[in-house]
Image 1 (spheres, helix red, strand yellow):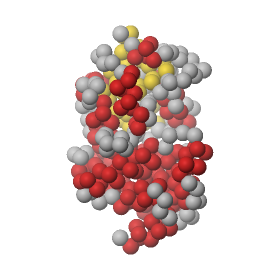
Image 2: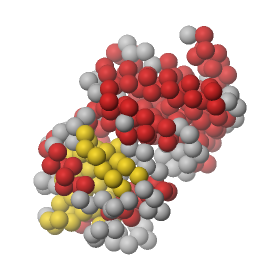
Image 3: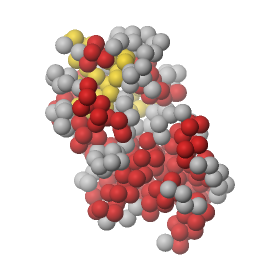
Image 4: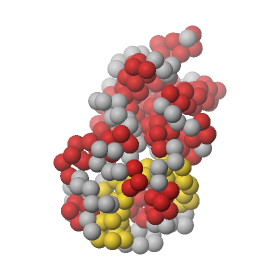
Length: 298
């Protein structure tokens, strides 16, 4: 093992932004499935030999990637993905628990557009872990323009990070339908309540949804065209097909698959999640105007 070395696995926009940020104070490596012209780009074997790993692989791909590529060698892991596995309804910490012990892993959350991080604009993030030692070890790597906080509410941060993407789609639909700022603010506020209700069922702490991981990330993602999921909503409001929207986007919008996962879990455990339900139905082809009518009358 390369002691003290840190590597980012996944070179999408968020992975590259984290690589940029972590390179400010020390040498940081990066790898992905395809070769990129990025400073300190290495092959996967080299990256996996580093003591500290930041994994920024899309949620829906992570289980297969771990099964095919990962071998635990006492590395410290920081997960930079957000979402719920659509095929199983599994949370990320459930997936990783089959490969990494709790004391070696943390999950990053909070409002953080990659395009702003890579410009070194200030932001605040939360490192969520059952082990405060993971927070202390990773927080020292972050540059001065990123303030880090610690939380032990892993499940709360995961749900907030996943759910806000679904609500961002809803907010994009609201914007695309020109329903006004009153409607959009109402939608986001009720979405936050819905997110917290869903999280409470799984044992999340209420305060998590009022902080950076919940309200902070939701307000960011649900109010800007910089958000991929918000742009999905805009496209749906214009009656574009989902395939067309995703092709034009050219990036992963985690909220699309997460909407299906939340709907599945909500039905299984009888959790009232009307906004997430309507987003899922719109993604399946329901007219957004019909969803609006249903949300207003129910």
